Image (cartoon, rainbow, N blue to C red):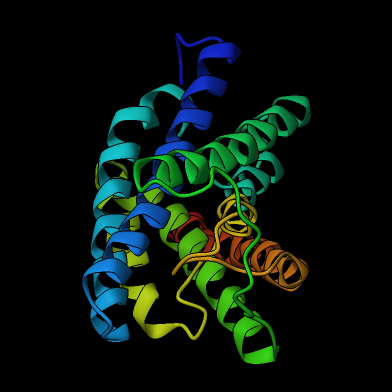
Length: 228
C-alpha cells in the first residue's frame, strides 16, 4: 500500500466491494434465470465469485490491501497494520460499495435498483457455518501472507469457491457483502432481520482465527529461538 494515499485506498476498497457484490448478485440472478436446478444455480453463483476475487485482489491488493470485508479490516486493525480511523473509513467504503454493487447488478438485469430480501437465513447451523467460513478465510489470509504472499488472490478465491459448498450458509464470510445482499430479493439475498446473527458470527470467526493463527505461527519463532 506504499505510495497510495487514503482517498485512493478508499476508492479501491469501495470499487472492489462493488464489483464483488455485483458479481455475487448478478451471477445469482443469471443462474436463477437459466436453470431451476438449485445445485446448478449455486455452481453458477460460486465460480464467478471465486474468479472475481482472484482478479480484484490482484488488481487492488497493491493499492488498499484488497480487504473488501469489514471482518478482514478489523483483523488488520487489531494486528496494528491499519489505524482505527482509517479502518472506520475502509468499512464505510466497503458497505457503501457493496450496496451500490447490488444496485448495479439489478440495473443490468432490469430489476428495481433496491429491494428488501425476503429470503430467510437464520438459526444456529447457519451462524456456525458463518463462523467457520470467516475463521477459514482469515486463517487463509494470515497463513498465505506468511508463507506465500504472491498466491493470496488464488488462495482466497479458491477458499471461497470451496466454502460456498462445504458451509450450510454458502459462505458469506463478509459483513459488507451480507448487508448488500439484504437489498436484493434474488437468489443470493438474505432478510435484514437475519443480518445480526450472520455479522456477529463472521466477526467472531475472524477474531478467533487471528488469535489462533498468531499462536500457531509463533511456533516457528519459538523453535528458532530454541536452536540459537
